[in-house]
Length: 527
Ligand code: GLC
Image (tube, rainbow, N blue to C red; front, side, top):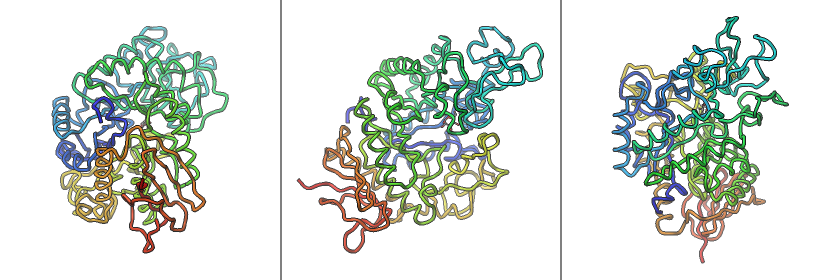
């Protein structure tokens, strides 16, 4: 695959740095910890990593509230440490994507502090959405609901009689939204992108990429959106036409670099709308959210598969397949939990890696980690306090060792990790799964190696299209134009495999050669 199009069939491993490996012994993972474990990542066989935000932040939303976009938070290290990580990753053939958060910043950003000080009507306030309310000082300017729960507005100076303005925050009150109608914001983000791209960062995952612009005049929303779904159900707060111009600009900027830098969007929209973000002059790729949100449901998989393939034929961009990330419930649990959940999670992993497009794996997915029920007192997600939903259960520190010491090798012995690790976590550890032929880790490594080989030898092509079917036997099949079929047995009976050579299965076949329930396989047709 040429350097210019490597991303079309890449496999990227999402690192949630807080929970990956802690070298500084403060209970929170860091860049140094990641550097020490880079060989592990490289040995998985992925093409690169995406790091969730490591920029300077008060960490109210675990880093998605950035106060200085051009620095590394001391919690994770510093710029030198990042440079070292980049060099070491590149030496291993791994690309590194960072996370950029353009929809909102942190109340601790000096620009926001200056806006608070400068008062109503000032140019400083015009960088954000400050408004007087037509309903008086005690009722927000409109009825928008924050994605994290509660009104999307907060008083700038609560209690003040001279400054009765409110500011808009689609997420927590600690995350004020930028005003993208102000050209200074556009300029600021150009500089941020250049800052990281100049440092040889290979690309950016763009947070809430379909946000940024709001409907002119910020009118009331006709239907009051529900928490969490807020971003999708409030069309006035997202997916505005003007946002596309930003990505056209960023694409040009990314292509000034050699090799061109990659733009991957978190565009949490239905496939037809999401596809518009990956038109040839916009971002390169976005996550296949219509797929990521699903349970173990054959009809829904096929429907999402069709719609994503349709979107792709319009935009020319392959989906970025994903079923897990730091915001979603781990699939072992989402698909039913227990042994069955594990089988299905392994099947989903094999299925994903067989589909045409790029794949985003979330740390711990290779170990088959389940969602953890974090005790109420320990929940750290701001969404928990305001919206009653906690994403902490998917963010538990990775278990490296069987021994409980240092929270199973995540940190130093005696240090309490930022989220508690549950009993028995060591049984899922890298140490336990390493070398075990039946482990999820071994399956992941094997599937990634085979995928690389099949692309390398031309059996699979990055340009393959996929045709989806829901068969009467309950299976889901995606047939690639190159002749490889991905089959997932989603019914309750074993199913006959398509004719051809079995390349990989997520579990052993039945004695009569059928694909058992909750299992996925890749089959190459004989020509
Ligand atoms: C994205 C992130 C999520 C964060 C939110 C606000 O959805 O993935 O973790 O809370 O944006 O930045």
